[in-house]
Length: 311
Length: 234
View 1 (cartoon, one colour):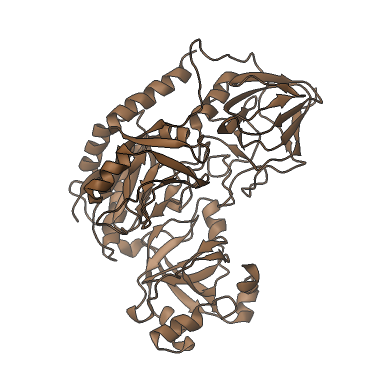
View 2: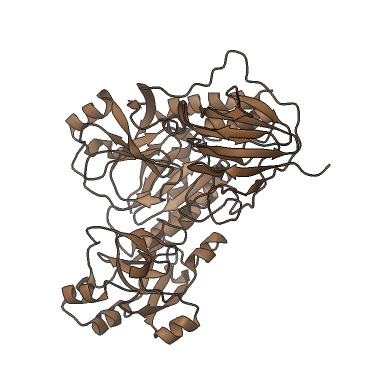
């Protein structure tokens, strides 16, 4: 039997090959990248019984992305509800789906969330660059052509393994997309003390709006103007989720494709789970910054991983 | 050196050694970089040294926050500065020309010198590579002489060509990739910084020293340099 594949008949705004990210190379100035909603991404791989870090497709907004099957394959779809259909029939979210040859998988528009993840048996076939298949457009790294370019019409997706019996989500586990009013747990950083008392009160006691200036590099939040004694700092490493406050007083949460070092004062950093939540928030969504201790955040994080370890 | 260990994120700690930028920091930053890599081994996810700090990202499924803090403290107790003479010395050929260095004249005028004197000054000092960041293989270097120090552009350019050599305040750097940027661009080099970084072997590393050498258009072209003027790319 010849290798099955998916052909990209039409592209939407953005679809990128992503795995967990590119680690251990930050000191070269290379960004982490990786699936922005890593929780949905891991679930997609878990559903197929893949190693969790297997390369998948991160589909933003949908917008008419059309994939046609050549041969039969079972995929898993998680994350945002992008009104996906298979030959016109709506698909159940957070489940596996089997495509027969000639069938078309179409992603239309976001109904809940922003980014859907499509996992493939054994992970997508793509060249590994510095230990990862993640695609970073700005850095021209990763992707099918190794130049960081998003998926293009006419390209063909192949995968590394064979279809096994897919899993279903554990009973009682609901994977919900964030809605307005959601909380974003955040570990406070040392520079928090440089912000004014009033700014700190407002930061944690007023809702923030997710701005439309939001991408895989950073997400702007709009709300009260924050300020303090620090205007800039000596450039230093930026952790995932760092909430930096430039001189205009409107925070920017630095996400997977952030630059590695920078010089704005920070309130702290969202937890990785909060980053995953934020990555699914459409512009206009109201969010609350909620302080959490590093230890508490780690306990929650380990509990999250326990889901995937058991089977 | 004064060690402070600060929480920076769920599994990120900021190791702060200094408060201000200084060439003499590098010997300590490099020593701390080695010591922390050894001490954390497999539990290390990423370690990002910069001018005064190292951001350490550990794996919290292997170590608790308190364990990671203690490990940093242990690793850096009794630290001795690294031998900075071991850093590599690089000579970077640059074609300084208005067509690829659109800020040459403005920077010279601001400094009250001729363009030729500006080029001579930029090529006169050895610059220390303080940190890599911003883009793959991008080295933050300094410090340029006070006379030619120039603040960033008020409005960054939307497109700065790959290989562009610029200055911002007392720092100087080379753009490995085309990108937006606000540095004052003086010229262009054909040295393929991005290709080195992409292989995981950056040409410039913290602690290295760099000296620029002014070359002619013919030499630049012979090295494979792209002579497309900057404006045509914006």
